[in-house]
Amino acid sequence: MNRVLLLNATYEPICTVAMSRAIALLLQGKAQALACRPGEVVRSASESIDYPTVIRLERYIRLPYRRSAPLTRNGVLQRDNHTCIYCGRDGRTIDHIIPRSRGGDSSWLNLAACCQKCNNKKGDSLLAELGWRLRFSPHEPDYRTFYISKLTARRIEPAWSEWLSLKAA
Ligand SMILES: [Zn+2]
Image (cartoon, rainbow, N blue to C red):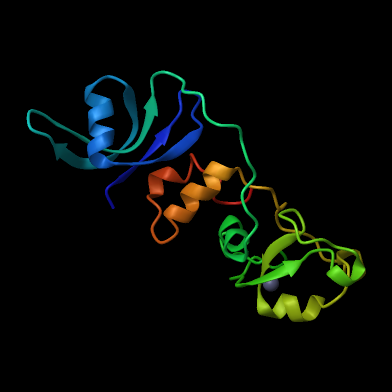
């Protein structure tokens, strides 16, 4: 993968850029590398530099206002890293934490990844009725973080994860 994660001066993720663009920003002094692949270099016409995976702009750029991410099934599964919110095992289904039949809505905060077993067991019950607890709190992902995680769903550069809230806290 030859994409580099670009962060604003405030360390906020903006987007991913092609390696050639990242190198140009570094060589022009417009960005600094925050993470590189150990032992790997990229050669340009005149220089060779450490292979960057995350770069940060020297100057803050103003971005359009934040939007919340569009709610999708895949978005919820990705946000939760395919981890069941109740038991922590592999979660491939989506559960309404407060069931629809009990007034729960379809929102980022009420939907979570869930394994088939927990989903079947839970049915239309409330957590309090089962004595279950959430293993993590669902959050509404930032639009850009969502966008970047979507772009990189198949293969996430390990160095990126600390800059993107891909794992629910
Ligand atoms: Zn489960």
